[in-house]
Length: 449
Image (cartoon, rainbow, N blue to C red; front, side, top):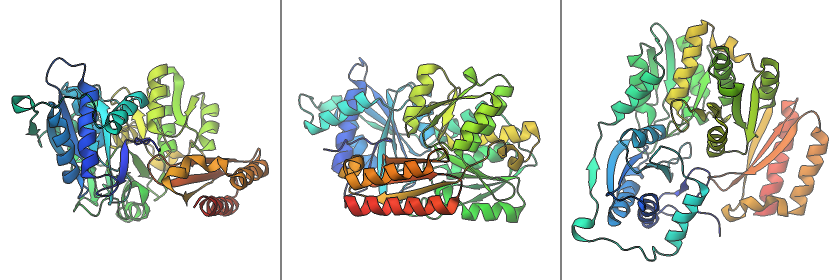
């Protein structure tokens, strides 16, 4: 049976895959596992993004939390990194975010943080899942005054804004910036923070209605932001995803600046200031080859992990590094927050622009981005880990690897959150690698369906 928890919590279509029954059980089991060692009555902070299903799932989740005797504090719409911060600040026992991040509106997800603001280990997630599968066996549900209560604190969002501004107190006076909030959780926090810091701000997609999150906007759909930056003659643009834990940028010419380039820019600046710990950046196997070439040239070391910001974070914590992330825009500044934080990443990037007095295009040129083609192959969710068990797929991958040997690479991986196998090919000729990626993705879909 497939594991309930993916790389970023439990996800599925709200109401059919992620049901209110499952949300209730996750609340029960999560609260029990995360707080069973506590001698006090535990408290869990809960927030959500702007999806229409967020309130429904939050109510079910908090019912489960309260049913095992824990209290819930509902903070409403909040970026994922804000929940991690607030759990730490208010010394509660855990935090939960109801969000499917960059996924389409009909999806939703449930993601847990511990009391220190870190994502849960695989072992803790497995313990929660086992408890659900055993129907909460041996868990005694309290009655009467033993049940938990729900408190509503919609004012805590401003505490997060003040925290991020304190982390990166950059003066943005006179800087024209366009931001795309993806009709998601950053629609208030990013606008307030950037305006408070003095930016001349043009904010788009800041009117969420529950159904328009990520719809042709945000960090997964950058065309409108690129055009708007050029039209407004802005210094740069910033795009968030639905839960604002990732961020991508656009330079003054309307060109994309991705997560690899953001890490290269910020990492090099941190190294020059002597604050990049061990002169090392933690990246994933999906990181562009251009990042490796930049690091070699500039005396920066790279540590590579498998895909998923949780694995980047684990490496950072184990080895004492303070910068890491993914090409997709999940960037972790571990000196300040315990998870990817789009607003924090944006302010760190803006600080480099302000302090160097260089346009973003010049800063981004420190790293040459080699052509990559990424194509998704749709496959049944329960089969997506098994693609190498099909001989024709394994043979096709081997043939491609020989073809690109020394001048590129082939990387195949199952999505952690969707019924997809992702095919990534890197090489010198964009048209060739796109053709080969499409062919391989079509073969995977045809073979595995």
